Amino acid sequence: MNVVFLSPGFPAEMPLFARGLAQVGANVYGVGDQPAAALPDDARAALTDYLQCSFGDEAAAVERIRSWLRGRSIDRVECSWERLMYLAAQLRQTFGVPGMTVEQTAIVRDKERMKEAVEGAGLRVPRHGRARSQHEAWSVVERVGYPAILKPIDGAGSQNTFRCNDASEFEAALQRTRHVEEISVEEYVEGEELTYDTVCAGGRVLFENVSWYRPKPMILAQNEWISMQNIVLKDIHAEFPRPGVELGREVLQALGFEVGFTHMEWFRTSAGEAVFGEIGGRPPGARLVHAMNYGYDVDLFTGWAEAVCFGRLSQDVTPKYNASMVFKRAQGDGETVVAHRGLGELLQRYGQHIASIELTPIGQPKRDWRKVVVGDGWIVVRHENLDFTLEMSEAFVSDLLVVAG
Ligand SMILES: Nc1ncnc2c1ncn2[C@@H]1O[C@H](COP(=O)(O)OP(=O)(O)OP(=O)(O)O)[C@@H](O)[C@H]1O
Ligand SMILES: [Mg+2]
Image 1 (cartoon, rainbow, N blue to C red):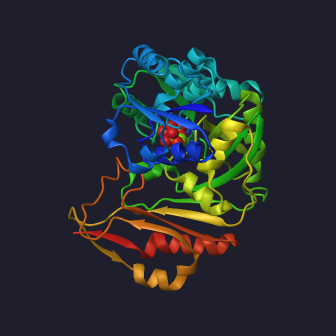
Image 2: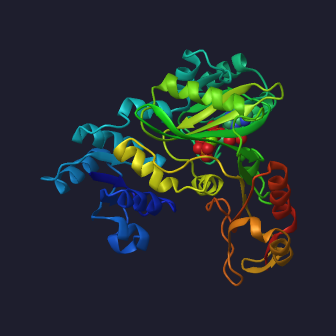
Image 3: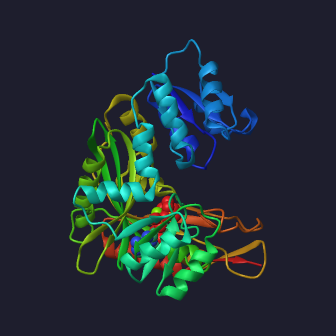
């Protein structure tokens, strides 16, 4: 099994997917824009060969990769990083291998195309429209109404995403997004925000998960002091997550999704209705794969690799715990982390339920929370009981302070 894997060294989790492919027995041909010497050790260890290639010009990249691989038969082209998904689809076409086509990729990358597809299947999406000019934006918002959301058509990380309560806020948001070529304007959906994530093969769901964002990612992107919690729920058939599982399964059917990771975001209204948010044909970011691994006691980096290479997932994917991941951002005036205030006491109280903890070490510079999604560290607590998991998670939010001085 020869697999081309795009960008094995970046972003942070990619070496783990490369490792997963090697672990299931694939020969992994890595392609990235870093020099081979700059690859993280675990990425390098997983690779059969590596090509450094610039991605600026897609057609040129396809040609370089093709001539590099001449004489070898390729079975799969995989990419877990959103930015290179079109290139991956083009390479699949070039090598004639299965997986998402360019057309299917467009549906999971373009926030209007995906809503049209989901809506076309009779599923609930926010009222929405595409706008390429201010004039178009005004005509969409007239139809959508307030409060509205304005965001880039292919955005990520809640960048340039604004809630607008009235026309003057909409005008201000339009001014702030003048540099964005194409935007999506949507009805603002009030409610909790959750995910529905899967690993699929042969059009079947082999693994599924729901996690709960607290608070909403948009709020998190706008407020430095907030610690995010992302909670992998053990019982996805309970009343709270169930509407999203039902919606998610229907969305996958509507899109005809075949193989690989999916990551859907959805809103749960106070009436219990699930409303589609967006879907990616890739694994979730922000360490959510780690959180799922802790919740299910599995290794989805390898599980995904087995699914894409061999169409099965042989690990036991029975849910074991609720697992909450908390991200911390250093607080204080300085640029250096000087204390982990409250940590000792939290370790004493909850130590046995802490699955992982990684904080910026004392004496190291604090991270730029706008660039590094995990900020100054992350903690995973887990337990069979959801209320207790939430109690521990809240304790790490409020009683642990990473102090910058
Ligand atoms: N229609 C909506 N109603 C309410 N909130 C919304 C809506 N659309 C977006 N948001 C908020 O803005 C955030 C970012 O929007 P969205 O997920 O579409 O973009 P993104 O930047 O691609 O996110 P990601 O980093 O997950 O790829 C959402 O997580 C949510 O908090
Ligand atoms: Mg999103």
